[in-house]
Image 1 (cartoon, each protein chain N blue to C red):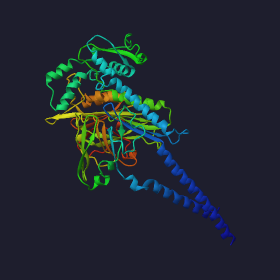
Image 2: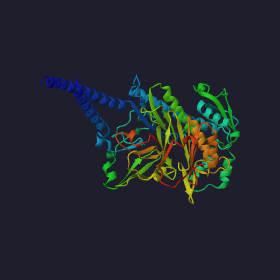
Image 3: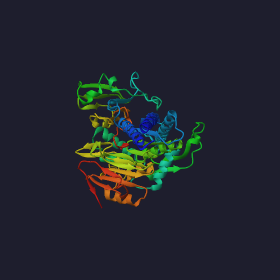
Image 4: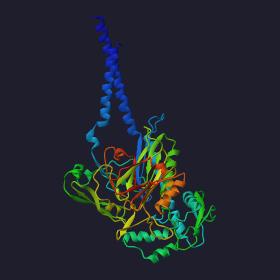
Length: 160
Length: 381
C-alpha cells in the first residue's frame, strides 16, 4: 500500500473512532435524562415495578420499586416544570407517610410516623441522585436516571 | 494508467481493511458495553439504623468473568454478614432477643450471658483501648436522650445523672468461657465465643459508636472472600469502604456532607483502594432547643452531647478504626483531636469545629478539594 492509502486508512479509522467516541459520550441523550422515581417501602404495592432480583428475600421485608407514573399519574416532567400539586400516602413500617408534589419544586415527605422526622426535614428533592430516607419506616424516595450509578456526578459516593 | 489502477485496487483494499476494522471496532465497543452492563450488581437495604448500599463491578481485565448470579450472591452475602452483626448488637430489635438485649435483661443478676464472636470482639477491642470517652455501656443514657429527642425537650438533669449512674465499662465483665448450662441443645453452642455480665441492674450496652464501621469491615471481608475479580464500594451512610481499584486507576472520590447544609457537600475526598472513611456529625440525629443543637454523640463523663465540634471525619484502612476514632475525636476539643490524629499513624482526620473552623491532618491536605461557598475557615497550624 502506498503512503496515500495509509493516510486514507488512518483517516477512515480516525473518523470511525470520533464517531464512536461521540456516541459513547453523547449517545441516547433522551434516555439518559429520563428521571425515574424509585420508591422503596415495606410491602409496597406489587403490581408495578422493576423489582430487583433479590427483592422480597431480605429480612422478610417485601421491597418493591415503582415508577412515578404508578403514583397516581405524576410524570417526571412535572417535577421540573408543571403539573398539578398533589398529595398521596404510602404505607411505612410504622404507619402512613404523606408525600407532597409541588410543581417546579419537587417531591417531599410532609408527614411521617417517626421519632426524628429526618425525612420531613430533608425537604424537596428534584434532581437525579437525590433521595429522602425514613429509616424507622423503611421508606426511601429516590430520583434516579436510567443509570443510577452515574447519578452521583463526579463522585463515587456521598459520606453522610 | 498503471499507477492509477494500482492506486484504485489498493484503495479498494484499504476500504475493505477499514470497513473490517470499523466493524470489529464496532463489535468490540458494543460488546464491551453490554458486558460491563451485565457485570455490575448493587443492592440497597435498611440495616443497622441506616441505608446500606453495596455496589460491585467486574474487573474488565478479569480472565474468568463472574456470572450475574455470582455477583448477586457476593453482595447478598456481604449484606447478610452485616445483618449478623446487627442481630448481635442491636438493642432495638423488635423481638427483644438480640445478644445485646439478652445481656441487658440479665443485668444485675450475677449471671454471665453467652455471646457470639462479633459482639465479643467489639467489647474486647474497646476495653483494650480503654479510653474514657468511648463507653459501650451508655444504653441507659441514650434512652434518656432518645426520649428527649422525640419530645424535643431537654431531659431533667436528675434523669441524666441517674442514667449516668448505670453506666461504666468497669461494670462490664467479659469472659472467654461460655457457661456450660447455656445454649445446650439449642444448636447454638458452637456459635458462642464468650460471655458477658453487667454487674448492675438497669444497665445496657449500646454499640452505636463502633458497630457500623465494624460491620462495613466484615462486609468488605465477605466480598473479598468471594474470590471474584471485582471492585466496588460499601456505603452505610456515615461509614464507607472501598474495594479494590477502579479500572482507570483513578482514586475513589467521596463527597463529604456539609454539616450546616446537609443536602449539600462541602468537598470531595479521594480514597485509596481498600480504604475506609467515617463521619460523626451533630447533624445526623438531633433536636434543637433555643438554637442549641442536642445530638446523639454523648460524652460519657458529663452525660451530655459533645459540644466541641460539628463533624469529625476519619480515614483509615480498617472500618472499625474509622468509626471508633470519629466518635472519640468528636468528643475532644478540635486542636486536641487533631494532635491525637497526627500522633496515630493509622488515621487521618478532618475536623469541623462548632466555630466553623476546619482542621485537616497532614496526610489529607492534598487529598481534599473544597467546594463549599464560604461559612468556614481552614486552620493552618
